[in-house]
Image (cartoon, rainbow, N blue to C red):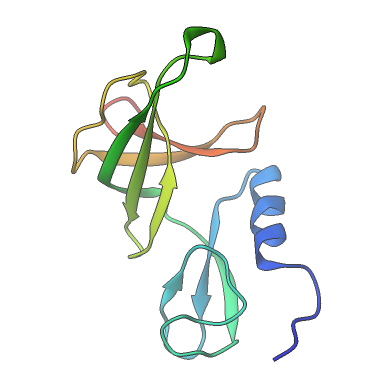
Length: 125
């Protein structure tokens, strides 16, 4: 299969730049897909469509990346189980260098200055 056109990653990033968080959905088997791809990892179909993500999920895993203070200091990196059933790596704001408790409910937001998708704990949303 030869792919022609804008890459799925470029489409995803362009949506973030315009303030939209989208994930793909397979027209053949209805699976949700992330990270962006050209074929469905569940069934192999290329009938993929973009849809708005609900933007909510649960922290599955967390680690802390340690950096020197002059480089911004430590920060958390999480894997979030989105409500659509896919996982994505991100950051939960408001926790600094603390580990984010597993199973914390989170809501996505797009940082305006970086167009980066991050999460906030729902109690902080």
